[in-house]
Length: 264
Image (tube, rainbow, N blue to C red; front, side):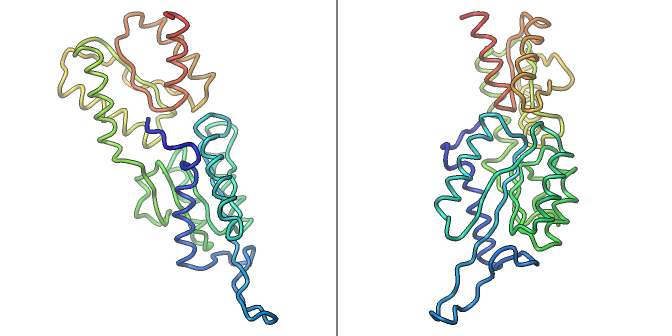
């Protein structure tokens, strides 16, 4: 997976949101954000404060802890202009994400940044947020780009090309033959599945001696304990496994840890 600098990752989407907000003005109907108005005593304009909430897939794993650091850095850097924070579910659950977003709509925040567990499931709620004048930016949800659900979808790279490179590197490391399988956060994770499917398509088309062992990848729900249990199960079931394609940070780090424990 592509890893951006620790403090930049969470702030990039927030900066995009701030640009949209600056273009639109405050978006809250209730005035939960201070609207710009002349100061009758000084003749200057009062500062506008935008409330920007980031909703990750799940809290408690390293990837989204780093994102939280970026959001906190953004809040500090633009403290006079924004109030930015991160709030996410304790497990990878689209329904929990939807409830959090519903709560943010009720609070009438100015903007919401979301990394959806299931982009299609959360799409109607994001459209509702926009109907309430809230700016919505997503990441890892390219299928929502250009729809009524989002103002902007921010992606780090072309997901299909990224998955193909994963397949190329795997084939090279496997010497062009052997068996492999994969693990993703969930089958509803749009980007994880895009990477996995692109890698599979590339290997199928170019390496007839490399065989996929399972119809679908394992799912770890972006949870370290689940990823570790899956890794142990995979190595027991397939002792001659030659390759492994991962989509989540948990999938990668826990398989690496298990292999290190077994083989040093």
